[in-house]
Image (cartoon, rainbow, N blue to C red):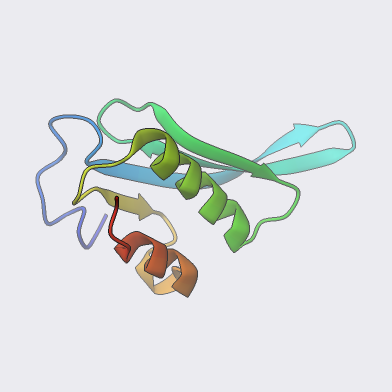
Length: 100
């Protein structure tokens, strides 16, 4: 892991580092994609979303569910295996908005 995640010690308590991933789940008639956001310390799912298509809306829905449900502390870092160079502009703008 690089960037903001490697620049700070591993979270010694929850809600400081979130990690995300996308996978697929077989269902009758095909499959669906699932985007999951995990708290790195507790390994608990803090947000998820399902979709028949893999696109930025899926990622934003999972991260939005995590932010809405858990109200992360300032400084919380979200890391995904796609990396920040591939982060869509809408997600970058969402991550820099003040929480209130």
